[in-house]
Length: 75
Image 1 (cartoon, one colour):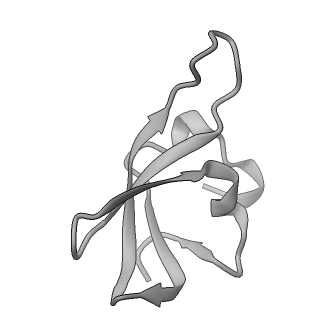
Image 2 (cartoon, one colour; image 1 turned 30 degrees about the vertical axis):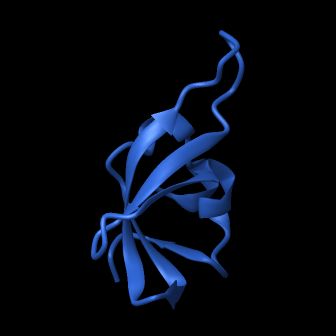
């Protein structure tokens, strides 16, 4: 996926590497695309799961387009 052409509905199961790991967590998998409560509203969030600890958290999917924070794939 090209960063300029990320689409939230295509992110499910994609792999990401954090540029600045925290607590040794740097590899993540998108486990869910969070559907908006209002039908027809745009997707805003995805859930990431850390590969090492299985910890999950929610972020705005557009944060993944920031090359200072995220790289696509497991590097």
